Image 1 (cartoon, one colour):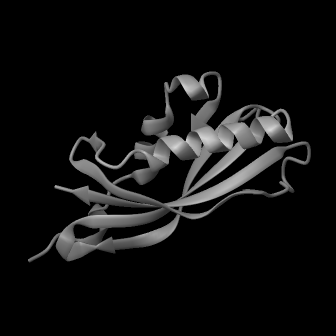
Image 2 (image 1 turned 45 degrees about the horizontal axis):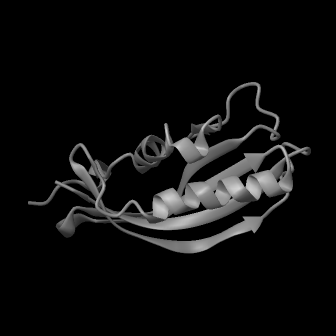
Length: 135
């Protein structure tokens, strides 16, 4: 009998951990939700799972991970988006506890997208597809 499909890893936490304490992201907020005082002009990378599929018999999760990247200017947000994206794209082979990132590919981005919640925001989005094997 196979494991239940609800055993997939917390990929948002894995990506937040992967991006945290990186020198190229120094001073940026990296989390799965913005802080209470967030207004869209701070340097920030907000990580969200946007779908994907669990392949039960292989114990592989293939999530779509969105990086919502903000900066004080459009060019600063673009630079930070490319820095965060590069870290994730180079993460194949990284082990987190019982989970291993086995593959990463770009699904969309980075692209400029106005933010209607934080009207002063400079925001870029990109979507990456990960394959994460869980032992």
